[in-house]
View 1 (cartoon, one colour):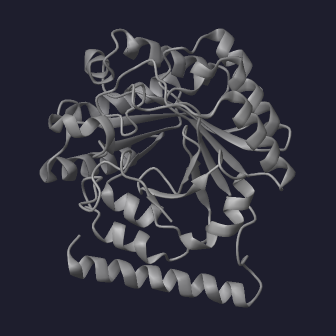
View 2 (view 1 turned 135 degrees about the horizontal axis):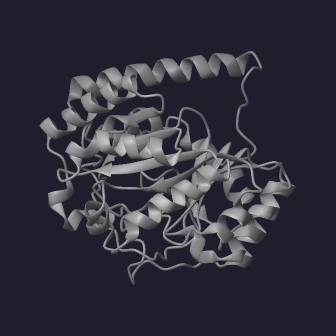
View 3 (view 1 turned 30 degrees about the horizontal axis):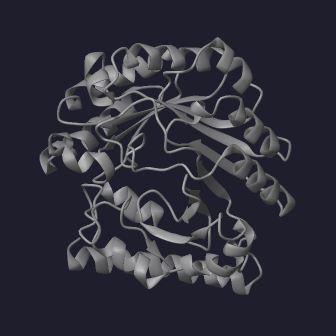
Length: 341
């Protein structure tokens, strides 16, 4: 990021912190959150696909799943006993690979009133899965569809995965579950954004989000997937045009979205727990607070959550983050290069 743009960002962030601190002084905002408002469970490093753009390298042999179902169940009970969480995002890898253990994990939080987001590639979804999943409360269920037909299949390295994803989306929508589509944009599928919006509308989605490929994990070996600056501008212009012309929501993300959206604005509104047990601050920055296999989550949270508030190391990391490409020049592959706070 250019120095003048970073200075402008820092000024905006400082104003945000000053406002939050003024609310704290008046007793209108907590000094710290007892637990995160929003927590993501990356339930497994395993996946039934080998997507070329996967920032987690899910399914690769070097990506280990240390947390078993018993660990997740224990964590859920710990969270409920400590006051519960408002929103839980279930991701992976592919979370449906957990089978009925996924339902057991969701049951514990559901009984405490937690709302869910479920992320899936859709390949395993059938009527039986939808029946099991439909009893829970969702912000939305998200199915990944990255282009039309064989374009999606090539990116996902799974023949027939496009048709399975489309059918999964239809099943979720038919069951009355709020459906969102997420779509990675590459030079190959950039010109099919309008077709993707039409598809999202046909399967019953309320929204579709377009994103460029993040420079991390498996994608760094596939430079052909990254948009250049002119193509990134086209993505943004086209997404805005399509949003104005359609009844479903059309959004997009860029590196700037990560800079403004993922720098913590307060102590612990969002956190990710990885399959290794590491507690990471989000998917875009490589900072780890601790590991739940070594210490209870609540103990780590109480000791470390305030480190997220205007942390100079986190700000330094984002000062090197490209506004367009989802990449930091400081650390390229944060899957392999986490920083412990």
